[in-house]
Length: 421
Image (cartoon, rainbow, N blue to C red; front, side, top):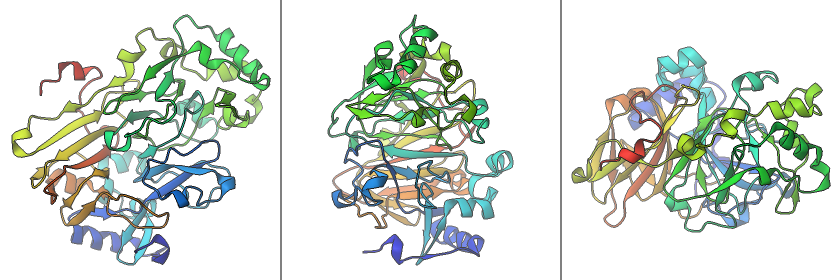
């Protein structure tokens, strides 16, 4: 078995290794699995990580309930290892972070528009997988996060059917606040933090989760994700504030509410309440403003494949990320062109992507290398990537996510209602 620990970690000459790998693969980089634990959550056991490895970072660090894709964003965990949250590129018997590859190759990987504006790969995606619900929380806006030297975090959700054969303990997500909720009511919840359940969910409403659908959530919006395994394209940040004091009998410490707020504001209840995007939270048409269902890119079923938009729409009039799901039928081959670089994960089947093998694993050990994750350069994406399903019995299904402003032709929110295919 090939493992991450058997690879040499490369610290110099990354550019030449990247260029060589791109030439051999047809513009693609193989990525190793990137596992992230959360000390305050219980793993949902649908990441395909071996059950013996759920606490590979140590029981004190918590269970592994996330796998990050094409990430150059460090995980904001207490006690983290130095490279936690960073994806590694695998070339032969060597490895180096995708962050280092982007820093040295720049526009050659992610395209000049993104490189010139951000000087980094500013987005990432993950599988987020828990046995039960997590606390009602929000992610700060750019302006709010900047107060503590961070970046804001809009995000999106898609619930892949392949990872949701069971819904676990609570397949519902609380989102926003009931119309008519007042700031004083939320402030009272904060005042009651140490009395047990502070009652924040009494002010919200839950939506039943459905495999094959998703949501687009902007900063400042409260949400308590349920127990579906979720594919989450999002901005490259790990900021949050948790507004719920008790979840399934587990305490949520005050420190997780204020960890990304200025220290002098850690007990300023009015400031904490004002971190919420009030109009977005009490929106009477919340579902219509955030709910997603897949929209086919084109009617290509006769050619043996279907490409669908699964994340689309804008946050505050900005397209920050988008995502697609490609399904290739057994024995079929297709060439797919995209406008920009992307991170890709296989969720079903096996086949080829240009010159790289693809294979969706059944079970993964913590240090094991897989053939299910790839980063595709802008050049390769624009030229067209050849996907081939080498199976005769099941489809090849891959998810890929894109950076900001890459897909101006993406549908608008609500477009699924006009789905013609």
